[in-house]
Image (cartoon, rainbow, N blue to C red):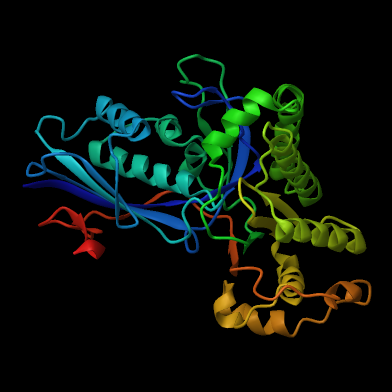
Length: 391
């Protein structure tokens, strides 16, 4: 007998002040605070269905149609914590079946674990009637997942308590605060990365000579300054800090033993191109950040998007703009017909272009946090307990 069913969605977040390194591996307590923007779910999201039934003999979890080991420590930590705070269902013997789907590449540096665990925890919390802060539970699955619990701009306070009760996500500003903040994601590689974030963090924390200064001085100062920039909608300061922190993060990885390199030649070319563009423009008009992968996430005001998209199209042309550009289709004519100013003209006539170097270009904006999609629709076939795409 099915007792409850719910389907929810949750967003990806892209950090502008990076989380890298843990002081407690078991309950995922970070070495420094971090801050991110939540990307809109129209473009990047995880969708999760959970069904509770008396007929199920064990908990089961499927990710993108593939059965996962639900007995893995992080899944179990999340389930135990949710059930310990439940106000519903615990008076009936039952198990849950979970199906989760990402509409973007998993483990390719696009924060799939953040949206995945956020969606899992949010959905479980709705089903079990868990009240109060649940970002700390999402943190048990994946540290950055706690930041996906809110829309807009979100900080993850590292906290100081050993039990992690103060290591939670806090919304700095909702998505409505800075509505013209856009994001362009240049998907350089959608393959699984060679060094996972978990392994990379452990190695950097143990061996990088930059970690102590970064955690003790650099990040606290940047957290203060970038939060003030967000509150004031000061893109110059926001963009400058965002790029510096991305550069420092990858330098930490490079000074790890053995060195870790998440960026590739295309990534570095993008960085160079953006610096050249900003220099010729005379101000910071867009800002890159790279997580633990080669894909570029570009923050920029809406007024600069056509100019910047056209620049990327010139250097990284695709075969078919209709499928290559994943954003509002009404923008395509203005991108294709854009004429740069004389000051910038040299940038738009590159000596060399990199055809098909990008998988695609995604154009999105800052968006809201998790949503309840349906209490009746399901990714799971109720009669079998399996994801529908497996039947």
